[in-house]
Amino acid sequence: MALQRPKGTQDHLPDGSPKLRLDVSARAFRHVTDTAALVLERAGAAFMATPLFEEAELVRRGVGGSTDIVRKEMFMVYYFGDHGGYVLRPEGTAGMVRAFLENGLKQLPSPFKVWTHGPMFRAENVQQGRLRQFHQVDYEVLGSADALVDAEAIWLMVQVVQKLGLTGVQVKLGSIGDPEDRDAYNAYLRGLFAPHVERLSDDSKDRLERNPMRILDSKSKSDQELISELAVRPMLDFLGTESAAHFEAVRRYLDAWKVAYEVDPSIVRGLDYYRRTAWELHHAHIGAKSALGGGGRYDDLAKELGGQETPGIGWAFGVERILIAMRNEGIEIPAAAGPVVYIAALDAEYVPLAAQIALGLRSGLRADFGYKHQKPGNAFREGERRGAAYTALIGSDEAAAGTVALKNMRTGEQVSVGVEELTSLLGSSSVE
Ligand code: AMP
Image 1 (cartoon, rainbow, N blue to C red):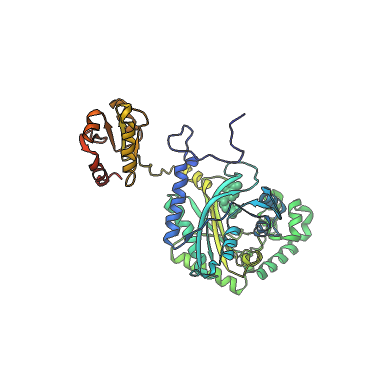
Image 2: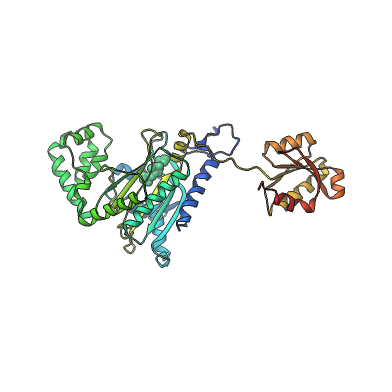
């Protein structure tokens, strides 16, 4: 049997692994989620976790009625189950909104800011940056339609990637208006494309009736040629008074906070429940699949899922894409600290004592021990390999006296220390 992980998945490896690269480093992965936690929790976002699978119907509604069939199949493929069936979640928002509604979280201070991270599943054609199991960091705000919330959400997304050290990032900002604005835009697009229907790709012919806006982000070259020939007006021209004012307000906040962005009229979110603000975060160095993440306001989602009307906005970025971008920028992340002390027994009979001392020290610091007895030279080498600040040896003299021979791995200084004093001595050394 070949030992091979499923196609479109990744192992995130520990330090020291022979095949380690930053984009598959488990420590780098943790660094991304820890950084997100720091930034988002400073902003008052609570952490929440929801199941990796949800009822298929919830996901179907979350993914939206008028999205491309292809996209829906991509989302719905990990299907199993009972009753109406379940699917592995393709994204986080539907589950988060369901949990908010189901658990009465409306009673918490409003707006409710929440974040999560975890694996998402999509049936993709696998390529660089496109996996079947990937991971997202997700931030959602429920209970406010205020433009200030939108601007803060974008600011937070930018903060996370900046704190990670990424410089080649770019926010592309748009607005898809309110449903009536979109109806007007779709009517305009239908009128514009209808005389040229024979030139549209099959997918776009299909979109012409259902959701002409999606023609604009068609991957087909001939569609894109037609779009530029027809000089299609942007959605932004069709914003109504209120959604235009909302967009302006978001921009004013971002300008005041010096968040760089580019207005990009091509940002169209195909899902029915999206409204107003929509944006993507791009990166210069990760090639065609340059989106690190995206976000948008989804005021109609809660109702679509069968809950009480609740305005909401959220974003998600892909952890693996962030790691690729970090790797391409040559970003290094802080090395994990080794143990404060590595304790080695010089005789087999003292191994249990070495273990016992290490276990005791662990209530306050990182302590490791050797499972087999070692000669002093080997013990020091092992301490060094693990990055220990100190190596402690226990031989017969030490065991009899209740001490250890403690070597400072940096200075080479060696002293005899009572086991009882170890905690205070190591705890007060500035290495932990
Ligand atoms: P979406 O939920 O489609 O807006 O995706 C948000 C972000 O998740 C994207 O910008 C990517 O960074 C990441 N992402 C989406 N699909 C995949 C995938 N199949 N593999 C890896 N990352 C993905």
